[in-house]
Image (cartoon, rainbow, N blue to C red; front, top):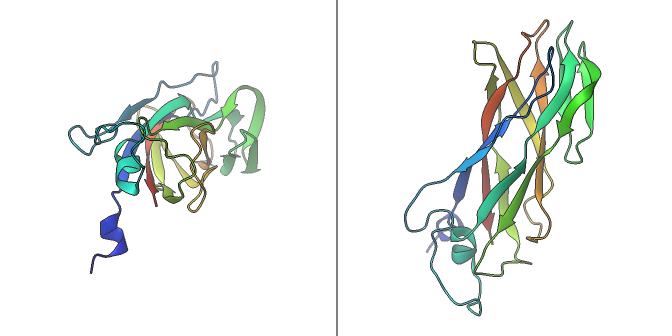
Length: 194
């Protein structure tokens, strides 16, 4: 008997996303990119078939392409004491503890477009939407922070609609007197179809 997990082709995409903690200086966004394995069965490397071919989990997964449109950015803040900053999937931020939100800077959820061309996989249920947690961020000179409690606009069980982007928010854990600068890191997102 073939197990359910062996029937699914799990695709894992490494999404390099900019995270900005700006305690001094103007807001900045870090360029983002997508890295994926090459070769047959890799992202965008699935079987080629006329659009009339019926989509199934294998060809929807194999032809899924995720394009990064916007970084997850936390805007400008100060941290006289430890706390957190959360940006939700609607790009609304809030703070806890000793973090002080300062007006200005870019605040945004990460936004990704998803396509499955040449297959029309719209309406197919999504089995897994997962973001590996936590993500470690660095400012390039040794200071680190972490992001956890990721939230996504598309969750397991939802139906796929290529016209609706996937958005990702999360919670930034800020230390007391966190070193100023722009922090960046990567997150790993897993998406599969049913």
